[in-house]
Length: 392
Image (cartoon, rainbow, N blue to C red; front, side, top):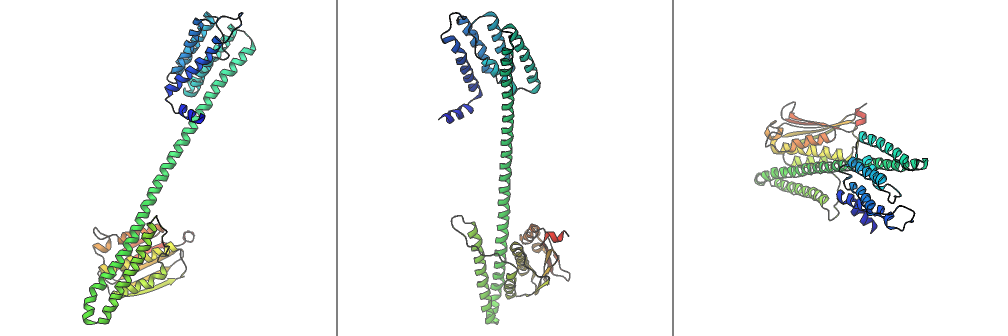
């Protein structure tokens, strides 16, 4: 309950806060006027009470005009001390709050000038009152404490604002990072979907187009063609089912391993079944590679072979993996028609070669696509396998 009230007061309109504070100070300064008094002391008159109220009133404007509010409080207090002889106050509440506000809100130059003026006023007030060191030290202490509390609150507010700003910046950075991560993931899924579907559909189309001819001339080849279509379709469906399962949030998705270098022979067999002769060679120090890198190698070869099947009209394809020191070079070369719009990545040519370049860049590598050394078309991708070794 108390915490709720404190939160409501803290978040209230500043003008209402100042009005409430002024009323609270008015209550405090009213107490000496209503409690029983010693007959030998000065009587509590309405004039003294009204002048005390007038001295509290400037606190209503303490945030909008802190220096003028302090001047009004000091002026009313001076008139009260010099012209009237009413009940005294335990503390100069209004003056302390006005000085605290200046220390909290005003620039340094205004604070220094105000502090010097208040010090002079304190010495003059003590000289006109008791002229004792006790009163002087007490007055300097309480007004100094009010000033110090104002500076501490200003430091606390500045720290809180800086912390909030840092939190907002961090939140913006996290949101941007999440959006970028989502965009990267969408691009990755798009590449995977393209590679899976493009390869499978291309093989199935080639086999289906060759099927009628094989039925008439070599029925046994037609049967093999239809089996290749079915196998390619099953493989594509299995890969798509795995990928779509990862995207589901309501059930656990099967965690099948990503295709790697070990799966290249089966991939090449499917391409051989569609017509061209495919050779496969690995050179250098053959070694195990990270799963993500092996998946990239598989997808690069798959996309290059898909382009061969779809666009090249090639009779022979060479797939070569060269294991270097800290890198792996993947080369797919065919003897087909050579580069054209679809194979070179021109407008309308699809996203296959773009995807190859993106996959290479993701592993700190490069991709070059263009005419082969002896004609045809060549895709050459260099992937970094060990950054530490490359830097030696």
